[in-house]
Amino acid sequence: MSHPPKGFAVCVYCGARGGNDPLYMGQATALGATLATEGWQLVYGAGDVGLMGAVARAAQAEGGDTLGVIPVHLLKMEVGKTDLTRFVVTETMHERKKVMYMNSDAIVVLPGGAGSLDEFFEVLTWRQLGLHAKPIFLLNVNGYWSPLMALIEHVIAQGFADPSLAGFITVVDDVDALTLALRAARSNETDAAE
Ligand code: AMP
Image 1: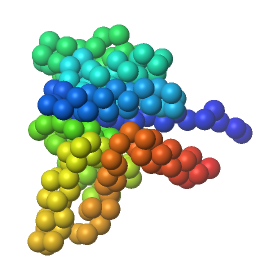
Image 2: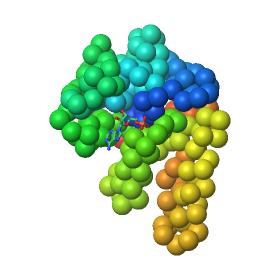
Image 3: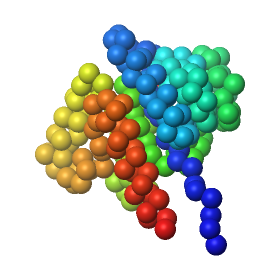
């Protein structure tokens, strides 16, 4: 029996702010457009602010499929983007993260603040524990995440994590490199399903 091809959903964690360098917004916009043109669904935090808004608007402009998940108490502060393909309102932050994670095949982390770090470390920890096998990509715009990778190497060097921890993270410098890496992840997933 043949099945219709399963879609590919990419969870994007990123700043609710735009950062100081226009390159951050530029790469967020490029990522949103690429997700749409590749036919991949954007899963994100449903805000219309900062890099979050830039990714979503660019995906929409190219006719992309978008799933946004936002907790009720952030609807105003993060300007809930109600015109997404699917717009889900949760009661708590934990539910938001869970719905985003469960509906995604791959995780991409753009520059961001404490919220993005929280989201990154959650999926990394779960990967370390073997709770999932979703690929995790850091979009290292302008070397933004290099200090984070240095911290992770330090954690490993000091004996607080297995060296495999770093192997769960793929660092890419720009959206072009990310697209190639996501295509490879997508085809691995398709092969595994066959
Ligand atoms: P930031 O990187 O700090 O700009 O935050 C990016 C996004 O992560 C924002 O939408 C925050 O509301 C969200 N966020 C922050 N902390 C959490 C959390 N514990 N669970 C879910 N989302 C969060």
